[in-house]
Length: 169
Image 1 (cartoon, rainbow, N blue to C red):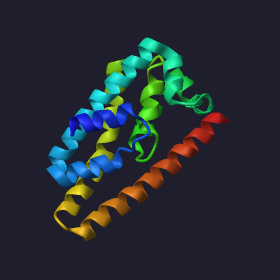
Image 2: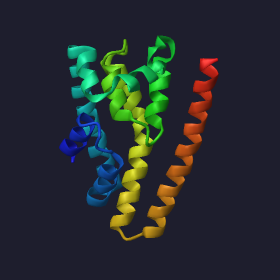
Image 3: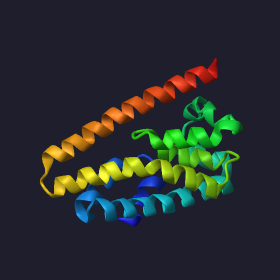
Image 4: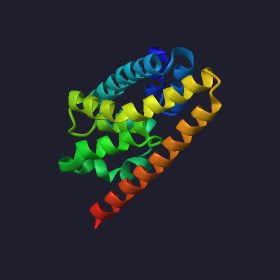
C-alpha cells in the first residue's frame, strides 16, 4: 500500500481518494491511513527532489504551461506555506500537481512535507474511515462519512476561493 500510494503521487493523474478508500477497506481506517500517509510522504519526496534537481523543464512534462501560469498563488513567497496548507487541506484539489510545482518554488523540502502532510491527514483519515465502513458493510456510516467530507470540502473550497479573490484585489 505504501508503494501504491507513492506511485499515485509520482503519476499525478491517478486520483488518491480511491486508493485511500481501498486502504481503509483492506487494512482498517488507522493502519490504512498510516500506510497511505507514509506512501504519500515517500512519493512527495521523490517528486519534490526531482523537480528541484531538473527544474521547470521537468515539471512541464507533468503540468502544462497554462496550468503553471494559473498557479500565481505559489509565487507569493510570504504566503507560500499557508497557501500550500490550504490546498492540501481541501480534498479533491490537485495536490500531486502542487507537489511537482512546489519543487520549483523557494519552499524547502522538510517544511513542505510537514505542511502538506499535516494538511492531508483529515482527507486521508476520512477516506480510510469510509473504506473501513464499506469493508464492515456499514454502508450508512460510509455514506455519512463521504457526505460530510463532501460538505466540509465544499465549505473549505469556498473559503479558499474567497481568500484568493480578496488577495488578487
